[in-house]
Image 1 (cartoon, rainbow, N blue to C red):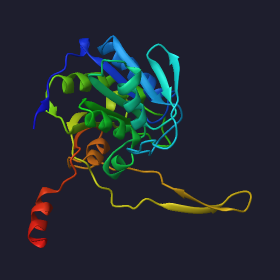
Image 2 (cartoon, rainbow, N blue to C red; image 1 turned 90 degrees about the vertical axis):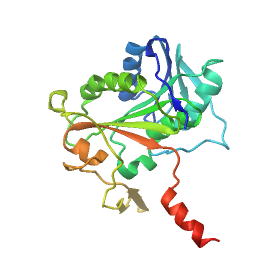
Image 3 (cartoon, rainbow, N blue to C red; image 1 turned 120 degrees about the vertical axis):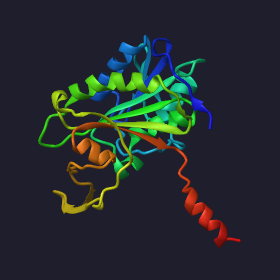
Length: 261
């Protein structure tokens, strides 16, 4: 398959987006990083938080765009909406050469990738033939977010990825560990992991006596010796995972050929 060639970042047009919303700290940091790499940086992000929006599109509600500053816009929609509107309308007749999504407040690893709006925005870029990189910072409730760690490592990751070709149906997913910069053990290529626990549903009653349900529970990732994103970040390294947009299981498809003859 034809791949994406090396990208000269100094001359590149970069789109920055996220799922935490236009006012998110991680978005501000990622835009600042992008501006150290290129002078042509655009920010188009959801007007409000869209965490766990996955790859959803807004198809039955009109979308509105609000200009916050030159080359900085908010969209009343999902991360995928933002990429589509940025490329199709806001950025004019020149599409971005690279889309950076994040930096998400919280990791996007293992099965969480399926729900992530951060990863979905980068995926939408890849669907449109544009290289996409998603960035997420693992955060635990008892510790402050280690934004300095992400800001230190993200530029070199972007430079290294931009300097090499990769397949057009691949999106890069980067997760920073919950460690201060001096305690990070390095940057490692990782595979997508799989957690053993099932997402927990909590039942409770609100102050008005009405029953409600809350999906989700705090995640604690332990160290490991393997190469999954969970294990790599658990032992203190930055995990870089190449995700394929083609979900076909080729071995299983070959096995099905005999079933449906």
